[in-house]
Image 1 (cartoon, one colour):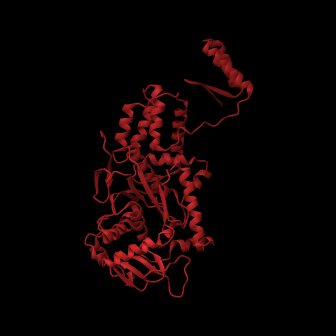
Image 2: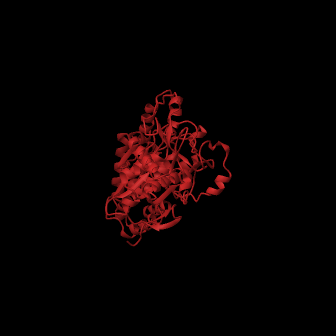
Image 3: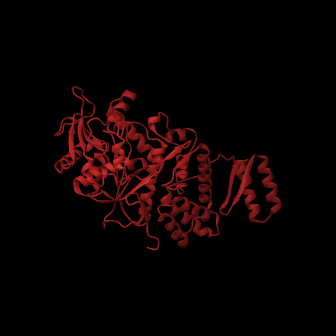
Length: 459
């Protein structure tokens, strides 16, 4: 391949040429939503990066087996294994059961995915459907000597792994030196829960029997167990947000190394935050923007998708309404320009090669998007432009082919004037054409001449 796909692997902290591990589909695991609340547009920036990665893999000829988890239990309000289960907190906040809010917020997430034209994974796997696999995983880790028991759960002993924290380049000695008294019965600051016990005398909404006692799994074990079940001991790519690097993904790797001796995935890719007023958007802050809020303000959800295309996934993107306005305007112009082009083909081979080069340079979508504008406005023959842009949109996912301009109701007398003016222009009767144009203006309409005919719009 002239332009081999190169990706930035956070595990090695280097750009690496991507080569599939096997002859079958590329194994891709992406950390999905924790369904104790609605997902905000910051979450969706990460999900969109992963959607684009899958589309780029497919552009390069790979079949992709994409697995995404749904976290519906076990995610505590603190990454330090303290606080309340977020699902329980969400249930109390809404007055519904934990099971009901899991269903509600999962459905909302799926609807937003559809609105953003994201390709569905091959498999959604819910943590609560895989309790047995998680218990089996923990039991294997225990047999291999990596666990200890406290009064509130079964913990992973990170001191048993000399390379623990390599993904995040953690300073374990510094963390131990600076640890607070609040670590409780944990032996080390970086140790984490594999299984949490239900409080004595308390019946939790979500709890299960286990060899260690009734309780629920820690947050990190679900992804290790489900990824391994569906993609194998060592698969191609694991993705998530940049906030997953120091804790969640670090612990996924530790668990898998303790069980089967691999780092779970060959490549570890992470999308960077969407900022609002230069601060990370977070549900814990109590205020966050949902996709629904953008739609209610009159924005097409694909304007947000376009906005995310304008920044590289490894750079933080600051969200402002002005930036979304600019993205909406650009998307409208791209759609209108595409729609006005005559159908023809094939796509231009030179532009397809340049497009591939940008995509394969660690998913450089901003430069790929610039190429689309070059095609639309440049010197390429009209017969090739539409097909080329249509090919590009296999990756962009902007739905160019499906878009139709808003149909204005044009009164029949206005239609007759426009048809007469078009006939006058075709006959090169310029004086009649000018007179008819003036009559259209007087009636409140503008006639825009195009290569494929004309369009009418109110003045």
